Image (cartoon, rainbow, N blue to C red; front, side):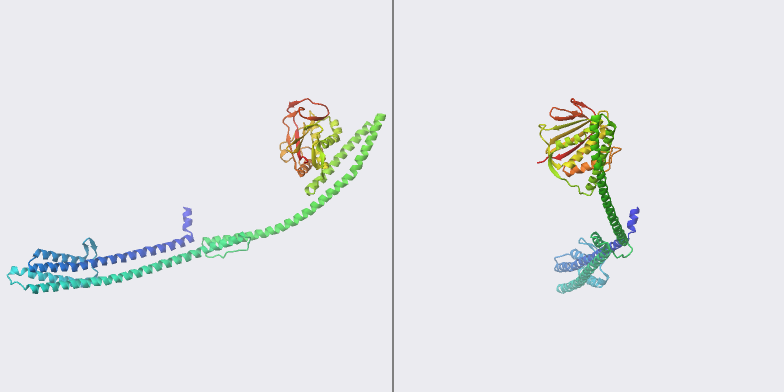
Length: 532
C-alpha cells in the first residue's frame, strides 16, 4: 500500500500519466467523431439508394398503368405498384427497414424536395383513380393516347423530383466526404503534434538522467569536479541533488585522503630513516659485540688447554676448567646471538648474499656434530646420524653456501639439544637421504615437542617455544634454506623407527637395536637441491 502511495505521489509518474490520458482522449475522440461521420455517410448512401429506387418504382408504375390502359393489366396490379411506390416514398422520409436496409429519417433540409416527390406521386395516384372509376360511373371512355401522355408526364415529374433529391443527396455526400477527409487530416495532425509534445516532455524529463550518465562517466575517469545542474522538484531533481552531494563528499574525502597520504608519506619516510638508523646501530652493535668475543673465546680456549695440561700433569685445577668451559660456552652463545642479529638485519634489508660452492653435505653435518660433541657428552644425549644411499663413501654433493648451511644445521641441532636435555629418553637422530633430485635432512629429538598453537607461525620472527630463546634462529634458517631453493618444515613425532637394514649409520653415544615405539619430541626437516 505504501509503495502504491509512493508511486501516486511521484511527480514524474503524474506527468507521464497526464500525457497518456490526453493521448488516449484524443485518439478515442478522433475515432468517435470519424465513426459518427462515417455512419452519417453510410446513412446518406442508403438514402440515395432508396431515393434512386423511386425511379425504378415510378417506371414500373407507368408500365402497369400503360398495360392497364391497353387492357393487359388489372386495377389491383396498378394499385400494388402505387402502394410500393408509396411505401418507398414514406420510408424515405420517416425511416425504417426496407429491402434489408435500416434507413434513418430524412434530414430536415431535404424535406421540401421530398414533398415535391410526394405531391407528384399523389397527383399520379388521383389521376389513376379517376381513370379507374370512369367506366364504373358510366362516363364516356377517355381518350387513351391522351391519358397515356398524361401519365407519362406525371411519371416523368415524379422521376425528375426523385433525381433532384438523389443529386442533392450526392452533393451532401461529397461534402461530407470532404469534411471527413479534413477531419482525418486534422486528427492526424493533432495526434502527431501530441506525440511530438510527449516526446519533448519526456526528453525534458529524461535530460537529468542523460546529464547524470555523462557526469558518472566523467567521475569514473577520475574527474571528481563534475556537477549536474538541478531543475524542478521531482524525483530526478532529488537524485541530482544527491549526486552533487555525493561528488562533493568524494572531493572532500579525496582532499583529506591526499593530506593523509602526504602525512603518511612523511611519517613513512621518517620511519624509514629511523629504521635505517636502527639497522646501522644493530650492525655497529653486532660488530662491537664481536670484537670482545673473539679474544674472550681465544684466550679462554688457550687457558683451558693449559689447565687441561696441568690437570693431566698435576691432577689439579678441575674447578678452573669448569669455569673456563662456562666462559667458552657463553661466549659462543654470545657469538651466535651476534651472528643472528647480523643475519636478521641482512634478511630484512634483502641484502643476504650467498657464496655458493660444491661440497659434501654429509661432511658438513659431521663437522657440526663434532662441534657439539662436548655439549652432547655433558648432557648425556645419544646422537645417531644415518645416511640412506648406496654406500657409506658416496657423498651428498650440494651447491650452497657452506657457512650458511653450517649455521642452519647448528641452529636446528642446538634447538634439539636444548629441548632434549630435560627429557627422560635423551636421543637425537639425524638422517640425510637423496630423493627426486634433492637431499632431505631430518633432525629428530625426543624432547617435549612443539605446542600446537606455535606450529603455524614457528618460522616467523621472534616466535619461540623456549623461555630462553630469542625467536630468530628458525626465522633465519628458513630464509637461508629458501634462498638456496629449498624448503624447511617441522612436525611433532608420532612414532620413532630406526632401521639399519638399508642404512649406513654413524652413531654417537652408543648403539641401539631396531625398535618401534611411541615417543615425544619433534622433527625439523629441510631440503636442498643436489648439485648437478
